[in-house]
Image (tube, rainbow, N blue to C red; front, side, top):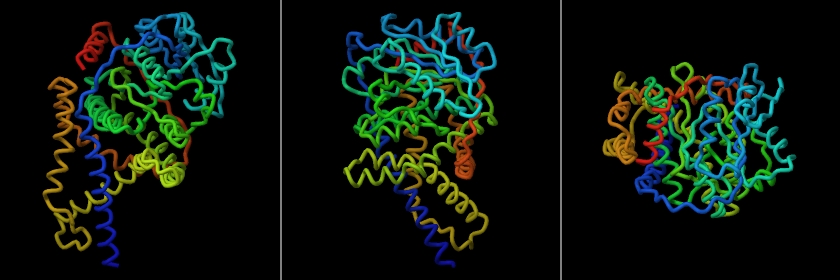
Length: 416
């Protein structure tokens, strides 16, 4: 029994080593700048879809925002999917000129079902679109969004994810922690993968899908993380989602730890669900087609397992301090490895934040970020336990920004 625990603990550490170095090596490529190329002539026609459930406080602002995009107004229409709303969301959207589809379904709840229903309605219309953009009601969008998406579609890309930014980073320690995570991962994960010609992970909002892809594979992503599920479906079909670093979507983050915890548990429920359902098909495709993109997607799916294993190793290391004789907690890695890991855990993110021109007062949020990071361990465990539960929970939004605040957001994009 003693040997079993020792070898299991060794294997856990090796697992962490391999995945850590895998992502550390990839993340280095995020340091290289992304060139902003000249925009092509506007050609593509877009349907901009806003998924909304009881969003009367914020729906007006995103409609105003989308009406001001730097793109010919005759080449895009704004749709609002009022999904099981019991407030004034639909009426406000209609008054502001959006095309509103109201959906009421007590059994099939969630964003995935709403998108599927909307697309069926959209494709039955006489008017045709080249692509559909998906947004959440709390978002704000950079004015160049459609120009950049038009560029990608002309190049032949079919699924495009924009840069996800924070709408309210300075509200609480939770919102700055979210923002720091997004600012760093946008480069260390998304942009780095683009440099290596790997796939982008869709982030739930601010992404565009060509209508021919939607008609070909449909929208059957009904998990609690419909964005992740659709990403995996695309990769299995040989369709590569790509990253657009120079178009941004500003997303509202939860203010409290409780709301954040609930949201992230839902994310991990969906992530674990997708991991159990799509890992084998991805491994099979990676071997059969010699597809590194499929293998890379599989590695991404098993991230929650890495978090749990890391939590176990961390707990064992802490126990070793208080109980030196604990036989199964021997650390096999030399101290140099852990020092080197600190660079990728803190040094590289600081470099990334400086490259992104993040103000110093926001970089100081790294002082509280470890608490946010450690909370992923119990969240991952709860997500695993509840992975078969499909109850969708709504994150309440109410954070609007005034004109000066939005101007600052736009200036932040221009500087980047």
